[in-house]
Picture 1: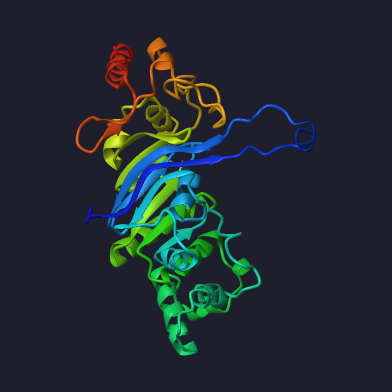
Picture 2: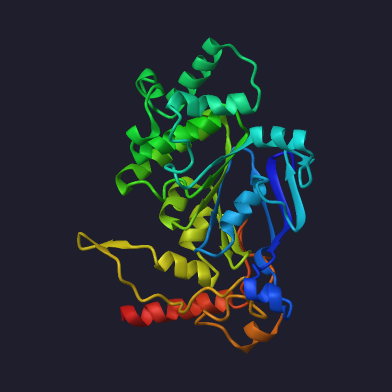
Length: 348
């Protein structure tokens, strides 16, 4: 475990459903709890970029907030740097949040529009009571801006957030996390609200910073194309649980769970110089409500390969299949053979 910086064990987060005004007066039957995260376990190694992917409603953002201690878990354990941080007092929680910082999805909403960029970067130093002179703080701010390639720093320190592009704002948001010298960053869809033309630049900058400073990342996204470029390992979440986990290239090149296969097939591909957008996806329907999770395999309601056993037998646990590659599908190899046969027939 010395090689692991963050370990999440059997993590659960259940929310109580909201009660309407009429229901609060009339009363009624007990509502089912919303199982946003339902028994999730994974480890993040030191210096590793760990990707958590899945469609909206899969529970990946809630998992990130639990790791950041922005939400308290219903049950389970969070171990950071060898220490149990599941339940922390106010002082230890503040210390933990200094070591584990978060890059939020929206660079437009994640900073105070009334603050100049210098003030945005100085705020964490004030909150965490970093005792330093004005000159020392300016040196820290300049260094952080240089780390994220906003140079010369003096050109940016006096600007307001609305004067920056989306990519520049996300660089400032990254600099704000780096100024406290964290050990780990939780990046929640950090490029989803940035123009396509600048996404690769921002991800490249984040990767350079990670290598230079030896940081670990929990990278949350629905975009498999960026996950392959950016991450070392990938965990695929569906309806609150991890259904496949392994090395990034192995997950993309050799997906074993039907849900992972569907996500990969949904990625647009270049075709004859154009982008092929419309595809016939192998899954159908919407993701079920986390308040009403299906029996058996929770993916069977949308899976084209589901059989009766998938609906009636207990939910499959993660099974090792190859080096560091785990999946939770009883029919994984049968499905793979079926797809290969179909592919051979189509080619012939």
